[in-house]
Length: 192
Image (cartoon, rainbow, N blue to C red; front, side):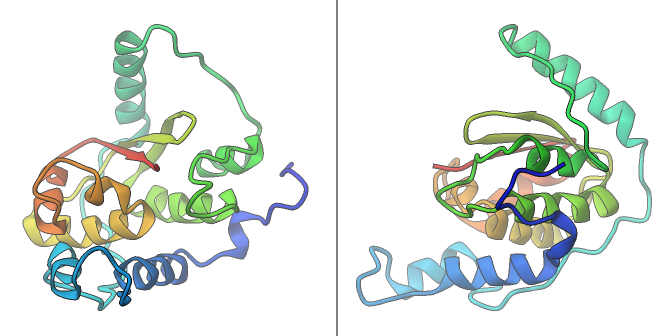
């Protein structure tokens, strides 16, 4: 079911993966282009301290309805897109089963990405809607609804794909990114 040489999503703990990536992306060194103060300002109020996984929201809409609408919208906006069916136990596993290598500059094991997506499926009702060369679009049935919830989800996004913040819309901070997540039913990721 999975390409040879690739692990399985169930072999990875999403909290451990995200904590490790967070530590890697918040680490500073003498040859760092950003000063320690500037780097820690990006991830304020957490700094180098991993805040842990965001809790599951109480209310959840039907993830299928959200995914269907987002999928329809993306097909209308991008008429050259193609649909594909991939045999996988869960939607999050489809990326691994297909041998997708989008975030190759960050991890060469797509099963790690699928492990995090499984956690987001369970907590936020996400569904994979589109995977491009180095992009990923998800529908979100239960997005964060408060600033504090959004800040924790933003921390997970930073650990998962720091380019969303480092190369996103200014200002390049976790807090600014979190504001855009409140009530947002689609999450997009792009790795450079």
